[in-house]
Image (cartoon, rainbow, N blue to C red; front, side):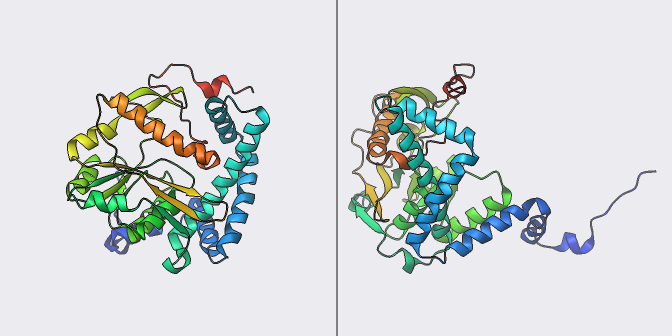
Length: 323
């Protein structure tokens, strides 16, 4: 005989957010709660001390994540073949230190009050955003994945409002906290796969933070050189600019040795879109390269940037697995 199980009346009467919160109390989320609590507490420390602890964290993570270290080392070997092995090893160490600092910067971004960010930003070319917005159209803030991504966006939000695009996190609890923080700091964060939402923001005259620099496969992808190496590259920037009519302004954030952040906004790209999406993508990759060369340790080298567009093509990361 079949037994029908009914939901507990009290449980079913709870709002969806409360039911979801009860799910997050499960033991599998306890390590995430502990990590988030620790991040929240460390925000209370002086910011300079946080950056120092971040470097120490990065050195530890480098030893604990050999696969990510291998990916980063492969990327550096492909992009900087002119450097000696010793120079690349030092750059790899500096990169993981920068990653560790990025963890502390993320916590600081999410929970520090505005007053603690005063004096951290060095604006360069912010007037280009104002000029582009004066035309009454949306603005595509073309960026890239640097370890300073979170704090750079927070600092720019203090100067100019914009809608950030973001990638959802696999951990649902971390995703919830991240989304809540971004909703509090910016009026409309947009999921990376929400193209309609992105176009809607642009057509309403908003600026949108957009970073197309990670490996991408699909009908809007092509092999385009990045540091002279073919990389699966997203061609969607061309289509977004064509459809919305929005100007494209490069925006990057770079951490200085003094613990401040250069917010670099360049003039709107001229003659963009150009003759073809692939040529536009090559132009974008060259712009990103220019900033990476200024602070190579701050680019996100632990990402497998050089995936091939076609599955089955040689994988440079596996080819170097024995090194």
